[in-house]
Image (cartoon, rainbow, N blue to C red; front, side):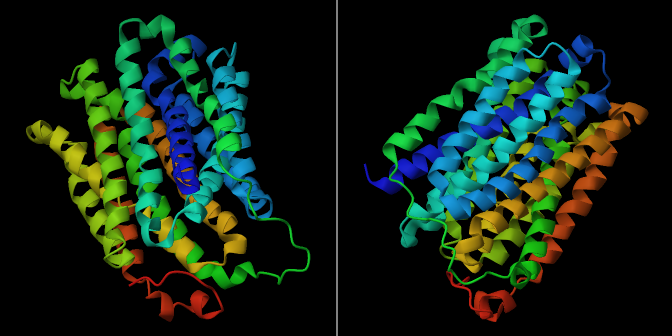
Length: 401
């Protein structure tokens, strides 16, 4: 196989494992509450800690990716988050559990940045957007696999939740594959290279951070609490797992679809369209009124399809920035958005502990409305690449048609 195929395969597999390990904890909130005697707000903090770690991992390891190359950093990051999945599985107390989660998050942040860069840089220019979408589809596939695992473990989840978590160590096998099958990076530290001024990228960076934050906040607001809230709709636990699988496959399809469409249409229009679709159907995915709950499944499917436009944002950013800082800046943008979404998830968990799950639904619906509206509005302000101030500062990249 060609090098770019190996790179895309490794990057996609590592990203699948990354999301699997990130989201698997959302299925066992009840078990964690009982085992460690903590409330919903504290349990939701466990999810957020992974995202906080991801931000710092994207910052530090993203910078190393630009200097040392993506291949080694991705192998290290993948091995790191997989190992700490095992530490979490057998944590004897809350302190070790939460510490392991934070460290795992650091490696997760490094994996997204290095893995995305690996696939992006090895891909031929004419199919780069499509391959980028395929790699990012690992998000939905990873989430879908958590649903499959949950269904398999469901009959004994109350006592086997630690074994459920240890399945997160499987991606460890991707690290040696990356080192053995992908050529060494040509990127090296060049002391004499021209200094890159990050301030030249502040406008596209800020815009991408806002849009990523909006998408992640809406997505986490619904997906993080859906397994816990859905039974109140009269949905069985096994059906919840099936719905999570279907919606995750849908978001994966959306990633690939929007990646392919970005080869033909302006990326800003795809971002705006996706955010608008997600905004409209978020209220059906998490319906407050009982009369609309029969639309929960189709609402969830279309909502996640709209969220599938999210990877167009980092693709747009990568096309506009200097390769010397591509990993650092894209890592900051993506992982800040994930961090912000995680904090919103914690906030909603605290609110849910106060008002109960039924009233939490309307809070989630309002949150998604605000967040996705911000994506749409900011997306509308994006200029064509040739009109962009950062592009005109001497940056190279593909033109956003």
